[in-house]
Length: 310
Length: 233
Image (spheres, rainbow over the protein chains, first blue to last red):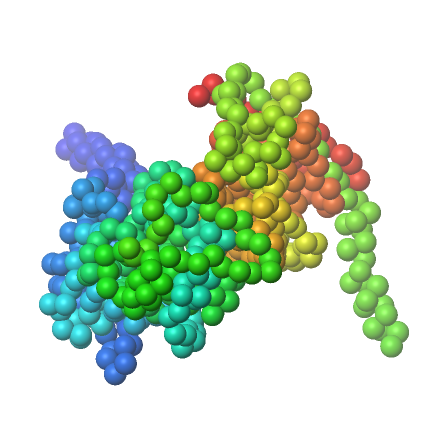
């Protein structure tokens, strides 16, 4: 009898203990600390010409070469990120600087492919020309696993760039007028030295301070963040540099005017050999004032020598 | 033919009854405590804007009125009124004038188109900073046509102009057509609410959100006030 009582007592005790533990066991389903879950590699693809990139094939390359800055989760929180300025791209928001597509749209696979191969000037993003084209295509696909935008949205349509008109002093002169009218100088400065009145206040979309491009710095090899050719410059202000203060001018500037602006911007790169600087030198380094029926608001009087070649 | 008419009548009946018994929630938004001092904006770098203001305007993060009224608070039905997906058709405009956003907070329905207008003699760039919607950044020199935009997800979006760093505003994109923004005096009004239980949310860019439960039983006006605790920093 006493034996049965003891068994019953143990059984009841056991039930109480189990009942007491169960809710706690459920509560421990999601640990507050500990390793993050592994990245889910979605079957994303990229298409560049005849190449097809597969996200799964870029897993080891991304972890070895990219995650240090961009982070294992593509959220720009790699262990080096705190030391970098400008900050690495956050792939989880899918906002990209160098695009051939309109502001607010996803870049094309080619855009991303070119960015990896070209690197980003004035940043810590190197030129990854050590990768094969296939590796770069695979990495483009891998970048897409971090944002759901790539599953719901198509890439934007590349803007059409009309053929470049010849460089003339008139074209440069009109470009200079546009530089004043569109108030590029508010950030980039009257001489394109990145010292305009708003320059010191600029922040990127994550509130990190950011500098406007200094055209005058750099030598004959000076490059832009998104390329080196005149077409690349054209694209930069027609698409905007998303995630930065640089807006898109696509709705406010006509294609031919845009080319004139490109020609003027080239003369701000005073140490770079270019057709534009040759034309300017032939005009004795003086840009004649642009004559137009509607007067444009002029930039504040410059207290330095006229911009452009000597 | 007759059955069609009867059907039509039956279909319009609930709409009519909901209009007949449309309740209203109205009230005042106020604050307690001492709000931070809003500094006057120095627009001397943009003379064409500075001269539009006889006296410098203040930063608009906290705008208050008489009797502790709090302006620019978005008050909206956050639950209880399922969104019928009908996007308001009236045009709404976000104007840049005197290097200031008018209104400071523009409330809109998801997918509602709105115009961004530049009334100034200077270029602005409109740079909203959404987290869930898509980010874009557009230049708008003087004399250029309005920029037409819309957002497809509900979100409170900070808007800024990088050229004029003092310019700050908000887009309140809501998945309801029952919303209002408290104006001078802190008043708001949410009309055309059919009988039901509602959660009303009030949002302020600095002081966060508050909610209240309101029940509308018929053709009545329920008063619901919100009080935010102001902080002096």
